[in-house]
Length: 188
Image (cartoon, rainbow, N blue to C red; front, side, top):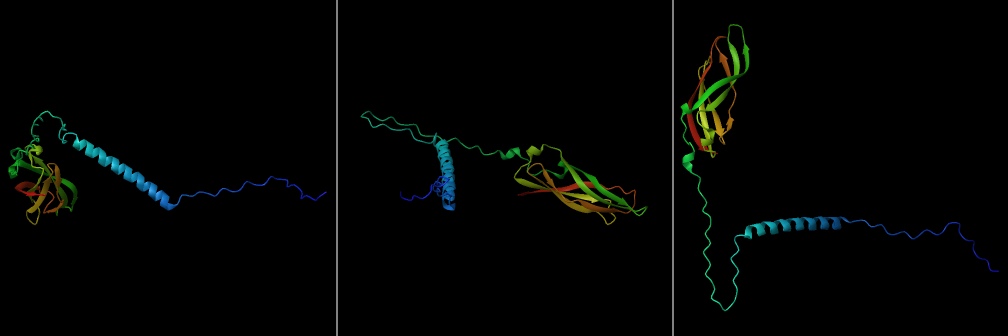
Protein backbone atom coordinates (compact mmCIF):
# COMPACT_ATOMS: atom_id res chain seq x y z
CA UNK A 1 0.00 0.00 0.00
CA UNK A 2 1.06 3.34 -0.65
CA UNK A 3 1.41 5.80 2.08
CA UNK A 4 -1.18 8.46 1.93
CA UNK A 5 -0.99 11.47 3.99
CA UNK A 6 -3.50 11.62 6.81
CA UNK A 7 -6.75 13.49 6.24
CA UNK A 8 -7.03 16.83 7.96
CA UNK A 9 -9.53 17.16 10.79
CA UNK A 10 -11.03 20.40 9.45
CA UNK A 11 -12.11 21.02 5.90
CA UNK A 12 -10.00 23.59 4.10
CA UNK A 13 -11.09 27.22 4.47
CA UNK A 14 -12.73 28.73 1.43
CA UNK A 15 -10.53 31.21 -0.40
CA UNK A 16 -10.87 34.75 0.92
CA UNK A 17 -12.89 37.10 -1.21
CA UNK A 18 -11.10 40.33 -1.80
CA UNK A 19 -12.64 43.13 0.25
CA UNK A 20 -14.28 45.85 -1.78
CA UNK A 21 -13.78 49.36 -0.60
CA UNK A 22 -15.17 52.45 -2.22
CA UNK A 23 -12.44 54.76 -3.20
CA UNK A 24 -12.78 58.48 -2.67
CA UNK A 25 -13.03 59.00 -6.42
CA UNK A 26 -16.11 56.80 -6.69
CA UNK A 27 -17.83 58.52 -3.75
CA UNK A 28 -17.07 61.99 -5.08
CA UNK A 29 -18.19 61.00 -8.58
CA UNK A 30 -21.49 59.63 -7.28
CA UNK A 31 -22.12 62.76 -5.21
CA UNK A 32 -21.36 64.97 -8.23
CA UNK A 33 -23.76 62.95 -10.37
CA UNK A 34 -26.56 63.32 -7.80
CA UNK A 35 -25.96 67.08 -7.50
CA UNK A 36 -25.91 67.49 -11.28
CA UNK A 37 -29.18 65.56 -11.57
CA UNK A 38 -30.87 67.71 -8.94
CA UNK A 39 -29.68 70.95 -10.56
CA UNK A 40 -30.64 69.75 -14.02
CA UNK A 41 -34.12 68.80 -12.84
CA UNK A 42 -34.54 72.20 -11.17
CA UNK A 43 -33.47 74.05 -14.31
CA UNK A 44 -35.81 71.95 -16.44
CA UNK A 45 -38.78 72.60 -14.13
CA UNK A 46 -38.14 76.36 -13.99
CA UNK A 47 -37.81 76.58 -17.78
CA UNK A 48 -40.97 74.54 -18.26
CA UNK A 49 -42.87 76.85 -15.93
CA UNK A 50 -41.57 79.95 -17.72
CA UNK A 51 -42.20 78.54 -21.20
CA UNK A 52 -45.88 77.66 -20.65
CA UNK A 53 -47.24 81.00 -21.88
CA UNK A 54 -44.31 82.27 -23.90
CA UNK A 55 -44.10 79.61 -26.66
CA UNK A 56 -45.53 80.68 -30.01
CA UNK A 57 -48.38 78.65 -31.42
CA UNK A 58 -47.15 75.85 -33.63
CA UNK A 59 -47.74 76.23 -37.32
CA UNK A 60 -48.74 73.44 -39.63
CA UNK A 61 -47.45 73.09 -43.15
CA UNK A 62 -50.54 72.44 -45.16
CA UNK A 63 -51.81 73.77 -48.44
CA UNK A 64 -54.41 75.90 -46.67
CA UNK A 65 -53.74 79.56 -46.05
CA UNK A 66 -52.15 80.15 -42.66
CA UNK A 67 -54.15 82.08 -40.15
CA UNK A 68 -52.65 85.24 -38.81
CA UNK A 69 -51.94 85.00 -35.14
CA UNK A 70 -52.87 87.81 -32.81
CA UNK A 71 -49.94 89.79 -31.49
CA UNK A 72 -48.90 88.89 -27.98
CA UNK A 73 -49.73 91.70 -25.58
CA UNK A 74 -47.61 91.71 -22.46
CA UNK A 75 -49.25 92.59 -19.21
CA UNK A 76 -48.50 96.14 -18.28
CA UNK A 77 -46.58 96.51 -15.06
CA UNK A 78 -48.24 99.08 -12.89
CA UNK A 79 -45.90 101.61 -11.38
CA UNK A 80 -46.50 102.21 -7.69
CA UNK A 81 -48.51 105.33 -7.03
CA UNK A 82 -46.02 107.62 -5.36
CA UNK A 83 -48.88 109.79 -4.11
CA UNK A 84 -49.71 107.03 -1.62
CA UNK A 85 -46.67 107.86 0.48
CA UNK A 86 -46.04 110.81 2.73
CA UNK A 87 -42.47 111.75 1.85
CA UNK A 88 -42.21 115.01 3.80
CA UNK A 89 -43.94 114.68 7.18
CA UNK A 90 -43.74 117.69 9.50
CA UNK A 91 -42.22 117.71 12.96
CA UNK A 92 -45.74 118.16 14.35
CA UNK A 93 -46.74 114.80 12.82
CA UNK A 94 -44.59 113.04 15.43
CA UNK A 95 -45.18 112.92 19.17
CA UNK A 96 -42.35 112.11 21.55
CA UNK A 97 -41.96 111.22 25.20
CA UNK A 98 -38.93 110.17 27.22
CA UNK A 99 -38.68 106.78 28.87
CA UNK A 100 -36.30 106.63 31.84
CA UNK A 101 -34.05 103.57 31.65
CA UNK A 102 -32.13 104.34 34.86
CA UNK A 103 -31.91 107.10 37.45
CA UNK A 104 -29.34 107.86 40.16
CA UNK A 105 -29.88 110.84 42.48
CA UNK A 106 -27.33 112.49 44.79
CA UNK A 107 -29.28 114.03 47.66
CA UNK A 108 -30.22 117.59 46.81
CA UNK A 109 -27.46 117.90 44.19
CA UNK A 110 -29.43 116.42 41.28
CA UNK A 111 -29.77 113.21 39.33
CA UNK A 112 -28.16 111.35 36.45
CA UNK A 113 -30.72 109.76 34.14
CA UNK A 114 -30.45 107.52 31.10
CA UNK A 115 -33.42 108.18 28.80
CA UNK A 116 -34.62 107.03 25.40
CA UNK A 117 -37.28 108.43 23.08
CA UNK A 118 -40.71 106.90 22.57
CA UNK A 119 -41.95 108.16 19.20
CA UNK A 120 -45.44 107.96 17.75
CA UNK A 121 -46.61 109.05 14.32
CA UNK A 122 -50.00 110.78 14.04
CA UNK A 123 -50.77 109.18 10.66
CA UNK A 124 -50.59 105.61 9.42
CA UNK A 125 -47.04 104.32 9.21
CA UNK A 126 -48.05 102.47 6.03
CA UNK A 127 -48.33 105.93 4.43
CA UNK A 128 -44.60 106.51 4.98
CA UNK A 129 -42.37 105.62 2.03
CA UNK A 130 -40.57 102.35 2.89
CA UNK A 131 -37.65 103.32 0.63
CA UNK A 132 -36.87 106.42 2.72
CA UNK A 133 -35.18 106.95 6.05
CA UNK A 134 -36.89 109.57 8.19
CA UNK A 135 -34.43 111.38 10.46
CA UNK A 136 -36.37 112.78 13.42
CA UNK A 137 -34.42 115.40 15.37
CA UNK A 138 -35.55 116.14 18.93
CA UNK A 139 -34.41 118.38 21.77
CA UNK A 140 -34.28 117.41 25.44
CA UNK A 141 -34.38 120.26 27.97
CA UNK A 142 -33.72 120.06 31.71
CA UNK A 143 -30.03 119.05 31.60
CA UNK A 144 -27.79 121.21 33.80
CA UNK A 145 -25.52 121.91 30.79
CA UNK A 146 -28.35 123.04 28.53
CA UNK A 147 -30.49 121.48 25.79
CA UNK A 148 -29.42 118.17 24.27
CA UNK A 149 -30.16 117.53 20.57
CA UNK A 150 -30.48 113.94 19.33
CA UNK A 151 -31.71 112.25 16.14
CA UNK A 152 -33.69 109.03 15.76
CA UNK A 153 -34.12 107.22 12.42
CA UNK A 154 -37.31 105.61 11.16
CA UNK A 155 -36.72 103.06 8.36
CA UNK A 156 -38.93 100.57 6.57
CA UNK A 157 -42.05 102.24 7.99
CA UNK A 158 -41.69 100.68 11.46
CA UNK A 159 -38.05 100.36 12.57
CA UNK A 160 -36.82 103.13 14.88
CA UNK A 161 -33.12 103.43 15.68
CA UNK A 162 -31.84 105.80 18.38
CA UNK A 163 -29.16 106.27 21.01
CA UNK A 164 -29.90 106.44 24.71
CA UNK A 165 -29.09 109.81 26.28
CA UNK A 166 -27.45 110.56 29.65
CA UNK A 167 -28.93 113.64 31.33
CA UNK A 168 -27.69 115.34 34.53
CA UNK A 169 -30.30 117.48 36.24
CA UNK A 170 -29.32 120.38 38.52
CA UNK A 171 -31.73 119.27 41.26
CA UNK A 172 -33.87 116.30 42.21
CA UNK A 173 -37.09 118.12 41.29
CA UNK A 174 -36.05 119.13 37.74
CA UNK A 175 -38.49 117.87 35.11
CA UNK A 176 -37.21 116.90 31.67
CA UNK A 177 -39.10 117.86 28.53
CA UNK A 178 -38.66 116.82 24.91
CA UNK A 179 -39.86 118.13 21.58
CA UNK A 180 -39.46 117.05 17.93
CA UNK A 181 -37.76 119.94 16.14
CA UNK A 182 -37.15 118.66 12.60
CA UNK A 183 -37.83 115.77 10.22
CA UNK A 184 -35.70 115.13 7.13
CA UNK A 185 -35.65 112.24 4.67
CA UNK A 186 -32.95 110.37 2.83
CA UNK A 187 -32.85 107.17 0.78
CA UNK A 188 -31.34 104.16 2.48
